Image 1 (tube, rainbow, N blue to C red):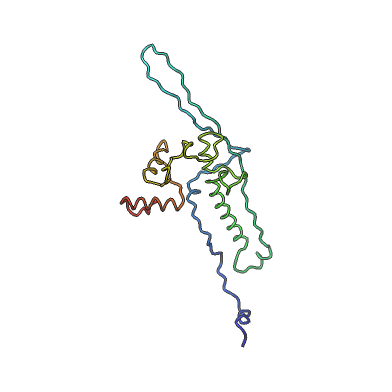
Image 2 (cartoon, rainbow, N blue to C red):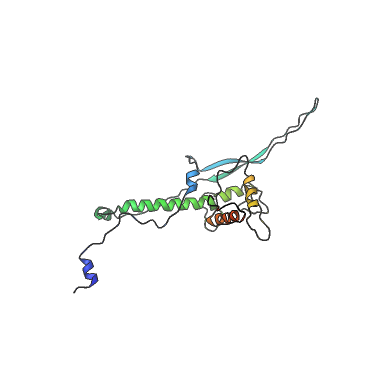
Length: 214
């Protein structure tokens, strides 16, 4: 009698078309972000620093001059690319798969993951580098000044300072954070799954339901 290995040589394996996508990741951010073309080496925008003051007058009073102040901020233009090689002979010989499509799809997914990470922490942590664009954390920090590179809760007015001892997240802090977005309300809250679980737990503890909507 032949061995199992020898018998397996006499038949072929059934191959499921495609690749099992075990690297699963949602991308709600990209769906909400507007994209537009940019020409040049950098992108410049202005940030308000102070508003002008208004005054009350009566007949004969001199009108006082008051103007607001603003400063420019700049972010350079960077390039992200993924390069994947697919053997042409394998494309021609493969009867069940499209190796080129598999490689391109995986490269596109890797680029999406990298873009999302850079969008948040670009040029702010050891996981980023100078070839990436400025992430949201860096842009928000620069609202304080053009030289500010980190979000220091004590010094940066763009940060809601938590408890000095425990740093515990509370629903009151979340309300304060939402109220700090002016005018109007934020379109959505961007957080890690860990923070979302904490908010859901706070909501359940306060009798506000399961918190499944967060």
